[in-house]
Structures are given as structure tokens and as C-alpha cells.
Length: 453
Image (cartoon, rainbow, N blue to C red; front, side):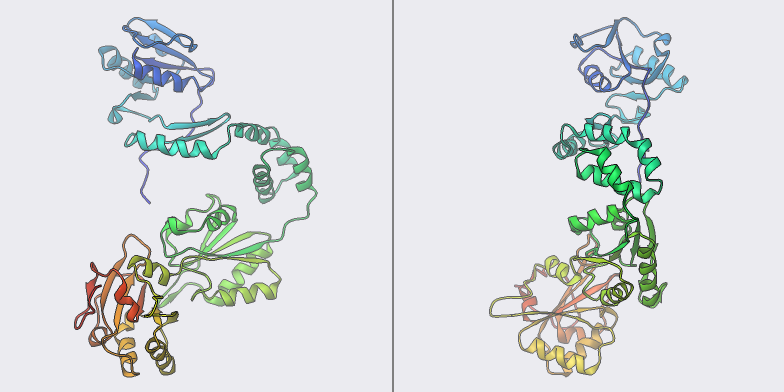
């Protein structure tokens, strides 16, 4: 995720003035925006060309005077003139934030596109880079928020002191407000009474598949539960951008398990999530891919069951499925492959390799996880157990992500030597169906290659 050059905030203007230098259409547009606030709006220009009638703004058709900035909270300069330059200089001398319309380099602040459901406002800013895109995003949010959403916000504000008194614990307050939103703000008092009389809620663990790493491949359910979680316990392979989709105030605990380095043992992870849920917390156990595919979720579920902790499972896109999509490979293909096998290459014994070879020979497609460092060894083992050397092989590193890399060749070519793979987890696809994919841009193995269809 990139870094912001501006800090988003809401600026108090109640009881103050917003001064606009300019009398044209740009000044009119800023006046309409400023009138959404309780500030008094003042227009100053020697040439008044736009129609400000009926807007409730104070218009002065004259030159700018320094005294015009008395009591000003914000200053907009909406004309390129000597008056505009003088006003900008005077504003900065007084410490008043200045916006020179359509000149981002000369702005102390930017005016975002605003969705207004008073007292709720949603501001969308592109730091002056693409205001048209900000307006398009605004339109989507407008459609999402009902016109009377402000009623709910006012209800929450009205109940604030009562909520603090009756629900002193932070999690309980948050859950009340979540329920208030879900209820649309109706019956706020009755809902509060019901929450105040409740016994403390039991914790829960959500085993959530984070998918292959791209934020937009997360499910809607996963996004919602991340926003509700008190604690996010995440693996090494889950990108920071996905973790950041949780609530800002949620506790984050990395239990990073990378090859050759385990900061937490599986037993410690089991103990951790049981303890957190036992404290009444909602725990998002965030795993790369799908939690039920090589995610050791079975051990965590067993620990939760023994402790009597409730849990849910949220599926994610497994790396093998992302690899198939990245390479447009139909891993089940009529008259070619009747099935798809998920297997882990790391630590595989001779008997397992024999089994894989037999499955591939029978027409199934193999997806081998965690085998990048031993790819040549695994390919050689499959060939030794009877799988033909010319069987197509495709490898996707960082499947489902923007930095993915594809490699193509044959089983014999992979077995002949090590491939210089890019950094990141890899999925090895083996089988006749692999040739049906789009591997045109993939890097070739040394040795024989399959023909790209």
C-alpha cells in the first residue's frame, strides 16, 4: 500500500467564516460545497459573474482587504488575479489553510468529494490527482448509504452517554453500535437495554482464508469478519494489505511460519487462539489460501473443540486454483483430465510419489505445493515411477498476485536441472491438461518443452 501525502481529518468551522476569492463558476462550486457546513460563506471579487442569488452567501464586489480574513477558518482562491495572490499570502501569514483552486502545488489542503448524511460525512480525496475518479467513487458510496442514514448517526450520538454508562467495557459498546447499524437505528433505547442486561458474550474464532494474497480476492464474509474481529492472528504468507483490512484498533498478532523459521509452534498457536477466545474476544485466524488446504486448520479446530470454543470456517481461494486461473489452465478437461489432486511435495516419501505418478497416468492433474526447492528431485521421482518425461508441467510463483511468474516445460526438462525461480511460494501443475493453458509468456525450463496450444 502506498503512503499518503495528506492526513485525512474533519476541520471545525462552526462559528467561523469560509472566505472565497473569486466571482466565477469555480467560486460558485466552492460556495455550494462550503454551504454544507454551518460556517458563514463570504465571496469577494471585483468581477461577480456567477449567480450567487438565493444561496445565502455574503457577496462583496470589490478588491480584497486583509480584514476580510478576520475570523476565517479556510480560504479558497478561485481566480488568478492580484487579489487572489494577495489573499493567499495574507492567509498563510495568519496561519489560515489556503486552497488555490485547480493548482494542487499551491494548496495547503484539498477539497474532497463529499457524501453528506449529516452529521455523517464521507470524504473521498485523490490529493488533487484525479478529482473525476473521486466523484465516481462518491457516486458508489451515495448508492450504498440510504438518504436517511443521518438519522441513525444522530441516534447513536443521542445514546452516547447512556451507552458509556451502561456498557463500560469497550467490546460491549462496539457490539451495541454494530447491532444499532444492523437495525437501522430503530429502537435504540430498547436495544441498549437488551445489551446491558446480557451476560458477557463468549468469544469465537473465525478460521479465515485470505486467498493467495490479492486484497480483492478476499470474500465479502472474510472482509466483514475482519472488521468485527478484536484480534487478528495471521500467518507469514498473509500480506500486510490484507491484515490492514481489519479494524484499525484490532490487536494484530503475527504467528509467522516460514520455511526454516517458525516464530510460533503449532501447539503455541492452538493455545493462543483458545486463550484469546476464552477472554471473550472475537478472533480472526487469518491463513493464506484456504484454511482447509495445507493450513493445519484441523489441529486448530481440534483444540477449539476440546476447549468448547465456537468457531466458523471461511473458505479462501487456494493457491492451486489461483495458479490455474493465472495460466488459464482448465485442470479438469473433458477427455483429458477427469480430476484435480492437491498434494504437498515437501517431505513426500517414495510411496506418495508412486501414488502421484499413478494418478497422473490415470488422467488426473496434480497440483504440488511447497515443492519449489525440490522441484527437480520431485520431477525425477515421478519420472522414475513411470510418468512419461514429456508430460507437461507448469509452475506459478506468487499465484493470484500482481508479481506472479509463470514457468513451463516438461517433466523431463524439470528433472534435468534446477530452475531459477522467482522468490515466493510456488504451485507445480503436472498433467496433460496443463498444455491447454495460456503459457505463452511463461519462462521455459531448460530441456524439452511442451507445445503451447
